[in-house]
Image 1 (tube, rainbow, N blue to C red):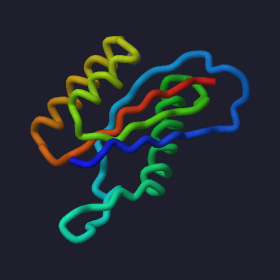
Image 2: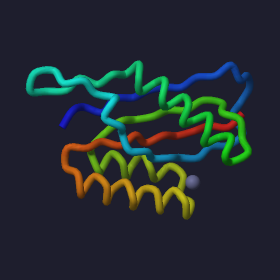
Image 3: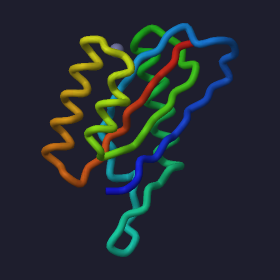
Image 4: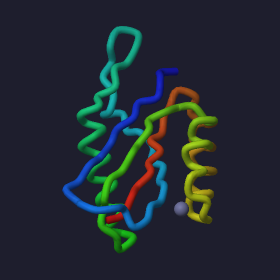
Length: 118
Ligand SMILES: [Zn+2]
């Protein structure tokens, strides 16, 4: 298990955020490159993908992205504490799904995002 990685997605939006929500996505294989017996995390690729995901999630909810903070981890306890920030039906369902995903794939990781709207 690797240490959690945090990625911040910034935009040009000024002023205070108007609201926020959380999201959890599974981590695609292209975010890693094999490094001997280990694997290295490609933060740049993850950043590019997470920006796109964040912008799309904002648009899908009729919002504009202010900024987003993502944590990549395979630790169910960390997923629980990060995902509990926004306690709505959708977020709870997303967290249950993510925890089941991690249970079924012991070496996998998910990205837990906190997205703020402009
Ligand atoms: Zn929510």
